[in-house]
Each structure stands twice: as structure tokens, then as C-alpha cells.
Length: 222
Image 1 (cartoon, rainbow, N blue to C red):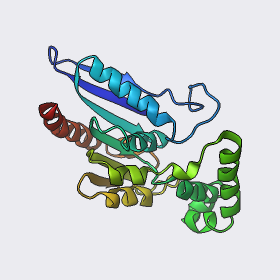
Image 2 (cartoon, rainbow, N blue to C red; image 1 turned 60 degrees about the vertical axis):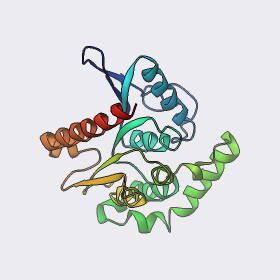
Image 3 (cartoon, helix red, strand yellow; image 1 turned 135 degrees about the vertical axis):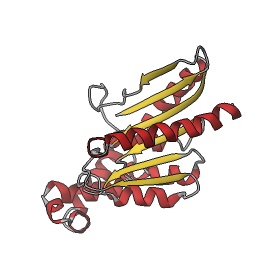
Image 4 (cartoon, rainbow, N blue to C red; image 1 turned 60 degrees about the horizontal axis):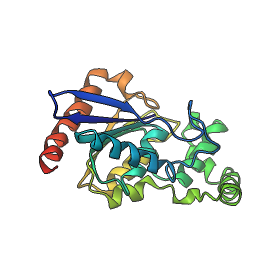
């Protein structure tokens, strides 16, 4: 899921707009999901629309694949005041290997990375090759970590320490890519996208304070 939130300086109102319209994901139509390669343009158009409506600051929030999509979008969308990414992956190839291990049950033993990079390597690479051959989509280029590294947008990364769907090391890598603009909150005991359930009060406090801090700076510069 990806959501965009804007702060509008008209009667101090706040508007929320869902941007969960990405191809072939959730309830969205479309033939194929490209994990941020094409979906980033959707985010760009939503941000343009919000600023066109008078927004002073636009924030991005994403969970799971949505987190990776919103991070991927900051490669070319620098107008975000701030972005929060919950349970994101760092790059498609690595998470594909991890998922191979996850689906064969290695996650219960903490061995997704090992199994994915041995037993699961060939199936993952075949899938990447097929996507490039069949759809013209090079999933090797779906790398949120490169987007974070090349962007100055403030990013709050959230990840549960017990996540076996997308392993916590992905958010660690993302945070290390740009320590000046990215910060990481690892939530003990939380599973995939489960931080809000384990620490609801702290979750919303951190997210809203992070947005408020950078919205004041972003609105002033705008």
C-alpha cells in the first residue's frame, strides 16, 4: 500500500489521498507489476496533482511493496517533504532470493538468505530473465537502495525484527545508504508490517512527529 498525504495552508486543513493504483497489485488493474520501475510515474503524477491543488507539503507513506515503491519514486521525485517506509526491500534481486527461501519454509529456521542464494538462485534468475524477455521489464533495476542513496528526501524506515517476509536487513541496508537523510527504527517482536500492532502509540507518534518536523522545513522552503 502507498498513500500520499498533503498539508494545505487553507484553513489549516489536511487532506489524505490514496495512491494505491499500481498495476496488477491489490485491487488495481493492469497486466504486470514492475516493483517501482513504472509505478514511480504514478506517484510523480499524484504529487504534481496535490501541489497543483495548493499543497505546501506532500508526504509519502508505504508498507511492504508499497514502501519499496515510494522509495523508488524519490529517485526522480524530489518534492516529497518526507517519506516513511514500513517493511521495505532494498533491491528486487535480493528480496527475490529471500522469498525463494521463505516459500520453501526456510524462514522458520532463519535461513532464507542461505537457501535463496543456493537452491532458489536459479528459479529467481529465470523469473527475472522471463520478465525482461516477455514484458521488457528489467527487474534488476528495481533498487530502492539506489534511490535512497541519490536522494535528499528525509526517510524514516520502520521494520520489525521478527519479519520473515521481508527480512530486517533490507531496511538496515537502506539506512546505511544515506545516513544523513535516512533513519531506522527496528521494532522488537514485530512481524511484517506489524510495528503498528506491537507499538501502536509509539508508531504513530514517531510517524507524525517525523512528518511534522520535515513539513515545517519543507513548507518554509516552498
